[in-house]
Image (cartoon, rainbow, N blue to C red; front, side):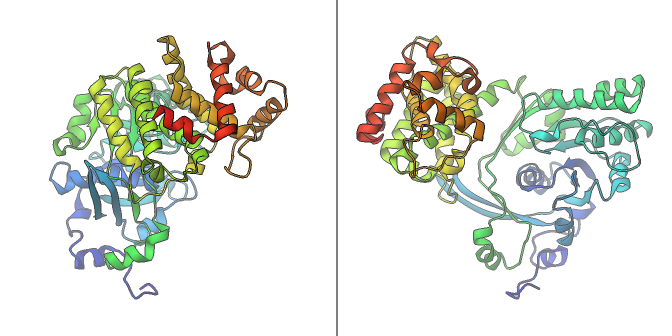
Length: 483
């Protein structure tokens, strides 16, 4: 019992409250999931719960904690039950739901329970492997040179030992669906597994089985998952009637793009039947571009522009008429025209992004989005700016975002905006600001932008004019002129 006299969520409590059934734990384990963090539990496991609720999956998940620290013990303490809190806007309506997830069969640590982890390979019912081990997880470790009977360092080394045991048992391969946020994640994982198998000396027969009997998928995942609602935990526990130390908050929006064998995915995870946005295109690339350029680039623009107008959060920006119109026009006039997906699909996604930005239940600080703004501008916004230039247009709003970044990093907003970036990057801006021509000097620095941006016709003059205007009158008048 907790201090507030509420019981802690477990199987007994959930059964008493009608939040689970005795049969839930009896479902066969169909998925091995590497990663027990907030995202997968509010994304993949939430999807599996919906499928189980509707009789479309009849399977559970064995969750593997891939590194020494994690939540496996905390999940086990609650009989692997937890609550997903969905809060946000969807199709113009506020969504507030609470649901106990009972689709996890077990949670174990690969490091502490190595033998139990390897034994997961022996289950013929298991068909799918899913992972989210962070972007750094799909990488080899040079210390993993031989099989020792204990957990190796890297995720690919852990997985390839499980696959070798599967091979030795004569069982079928898996659908392998990584969710790490790197390009071509499935192809990258497959290449790492083949290299690790070679390091272990597993032989050509196993390598052939790995390639031919397992299917690897490139993916993109999209759902904002703030995680454990620490600031409202007591309030939510009182509402739920139990303490849940593993509850996780997420937005209603969800998108899972899985590229590869669409027929196999739709059969194994029939989420489309419930209207869940699991899409199976030939390539993830256009969806990745859509997310990076239509969701992340406007975020970076807000951090560069809206903060200088006195706006602190994304929600405040959406309630600021000038800033919202500015962002809407950036999307409609400067981003959508240079992307490769159909225009109607891009417009629908842009509308969904604006709705997500307007989520009244999430206070997304622009200072947080502004972390490492220079690198973010390079990956999220600069390709769009350059595509506009190829079309013969200098995009004024993206240029203003660049100007706001230079204004801030040049020290002109000192005391008004928090700047957090790599010290080497900040030093380059500081050194450039000390020259007679700050804008030309910094835009010419290929180590910052990947190329010499002074070669972009009209860009230097446009940025200089914007910075002069911001110094003279503030940025609000420039926002208004472009809104």
